[in-house]
Image (cartoon, rainbow, N blue to C red; front, side, top):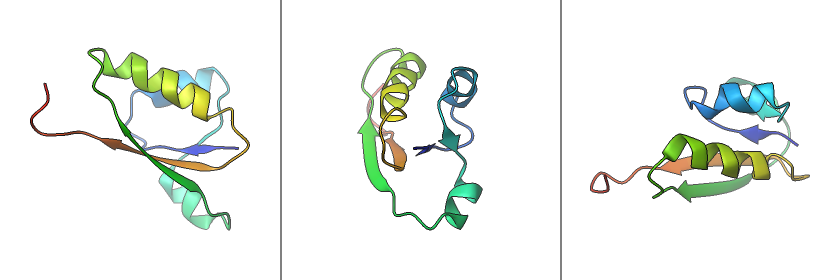
Length: 76
């Protein structure tokens, strides 16, 4: 099933090339499926790599998942 992630996320291009089914927010609104909502707090130093790895794993589940990335203001 697809994962719903923000369009501006750098991982979108990588996941698309790997045939991971992602869904943009406009398409997800038209779906009649309630998604599982997950918030990810990524404290790893190389954020793009870590987010891509996490999304790759979540994209292989049978559930439709809505991903929200949490970015605290005080963490560098």
